[in-house]
Image (cartoon, rainbow, N blue to C red; front, top):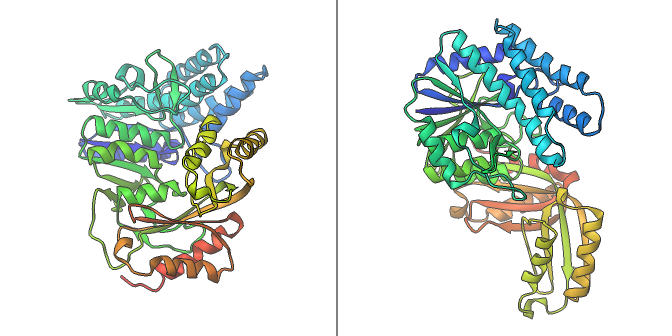
Length: 454
């Protein structure tokens, strides 16, 4: 069996949903369809999720919710009319939204989670109704009744081990197409929680692992994954095949096609993934696999992500002080901050993490504690950094690759703040000021891809 996940652009309109139906009909093994909320129909359009966030904010601020509610309902009504569906489905969606709006609002996060998740949930109901209307035996399945259990607050939402057993029991041996909403699950107490960004990718991956699918298809709006951001690099090389490790590294540093956390369930179950285009389903797409033959090009892809900060700490003879690093990281842990890299020297250490975790108050507390508790001579924050990541399974067999990358960056005139070679020898990371991000990406692409013809 195949699990097929369709992203927001793939289900943004009636026209797109008709394409989804044709894809499902084209292969009888596509019995499990995971859907996102309707995305953008055009560049200036708003995603339904964004409309739902507006609705939730209006409710939390005690404002009139009707205009925001109408904006959401109008999107579903337009889709239903375009699919020639009975508008009773829109009445079902409106009743669902009003029920969510009437929830208690003491916990703003859970209230917003419930409203945001309605985008996927109601779209799954609409799409299953459409499938049935055109002769595809289909059934909407609620994550709660299917047993998609996730952990409680305050930890980041993740599927519990028993969720896989529950889903296997609920989903196996179906003669119908199961239409499953992405993005959310339920705690054991029955509270709805959403996954992080790329949440529908995570749901699809969990389902694929649960039923031991032969393939997990991830449909989006591009023919394949590119070796670099096509918005920055002109006509980058397409990637035909990539390993889980490579994709994980690239996704971590800005590849938006596939969320890095979504790989874990299928990686553990050794289920191949294929990223395909809803608008061009005959294109082979990009295959993500456990292992592949390394070609003559050592680099598979280059990616970049901005929004990083650096905590710089200096203390003479730091390297001889047992427990210094642990104490420093404990201070960050107590401030609920996770870190990405910790490059260090004899007398200094830098901790790199994503800036969204910081507030001015947190920064002041951390600096004060580092100086008072660790007796550091200097401690300060620096902001607006990007991480540039060069990834490839062939890197560990290539001499001088780090030197080539550093030389390419030097040609741009940018300063390298940090270099980190992953222990797996699949990735090489550079910390640079984010104002230099795009010109570095273009120069690295020229260094590793432009000269080679395959």
